[in-house]
Length: 336
Ligand SMILES: Cc1cc2nc3c(=O)[nH]c(=O)nc-3n(C[C@H](O)[C@H](O)[C@H](O)COP(=O)(O)OP(=O)(O)OC[C@H]3O[C@@H](n4cnc5c(N)ncnc54)[C@H](O)[C@@H]3O)c2cc1C
Image 1 (cartoon, helix red, strand yellow):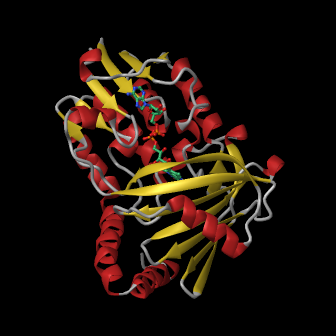
Image 2 (image 1 turned 60 degrees about the vertical axis):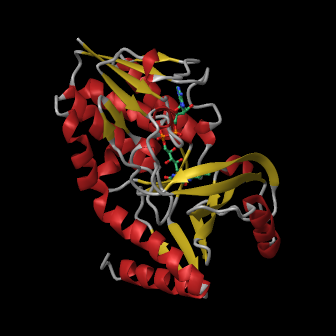
């Protein structure tokens, strides 16, 4: 029986483990999670939690308590223009990420996956599996050990505010800035009228993100009691290599987030599913090809935007917003 070590018990780790077992019962899968408790740790909440469920990723639709709110309205502000998009029922939500990770962990266990908690992997030498799946997020523990470079990254900072005057249960707001980057306001737990309020900048930055978010709160009179603060590195697009020797990189460690919006949840789930299937059915070498096929269109679009912005912002921040307005106009006309 072949053995697969999955390093990291987050979304990508569990989607990999479930996929491995669904495609081949006769395989020994161990998930190694550094924290003592699945889901309810720092990384379990390290996210804005806005999630879309359409196309390929419908298979990973969160159920029951895993959903805080259904989202019906997406408001995007770019310079002086506001775009309002109405979402079809059941296609967008604010995810209760901890609950969702626990749900996936229960399903993995039901399928026979072993979950070792409090098990921090320091080196590949700690593992004996024929295949290793790196689902450790960003920065990846294994890429650091192997001295492999990351792709483009960004920085984020987020506060969760309780009893907020900006809580609107079915609406997410995204406000783009010239830098390039954006602020977000997502309605989290309705019982506490919580919002996730954050700022993200793509590319290297020395900006004081906390200071920027405080200024944004003041400017828009956003109030509420801070009950949680998070943030950190966010990978923008594919973080090559996707495979190195017998190691496959999934989630933030491999496919990163969509560079335009920072969405990484669906990419974590789908990349894990593809990696699990490729190993279980005996074609792991095809993993990078399958991933590129799935994500390349969005990567080219997102990365071109990032590179173009790096040039444009030197000329004029306003041009960054103009280009973004053009992209959104095309999306609204369903050309993109
Ligand atoms: C502030 C912020 C807001 C975001 N908002 C959104 C959003 O609204 N929507 C969206 O779609 N995406 C969002 N993202 C991106 C999203 O969070 C990630 O893309 C997604 O969590 C990636 O999942 P993952 O399983 O690859 O990694 P992670 O969620 O980081 O999980 C990695 C797991 O590996 C474990 N681990 C790490 N190192 C080791 C080790 N050495 N040994 C054992 N275990 C280890 C960790 O404890 C953790 O459980 C946001 C990210 C940030 C930072």
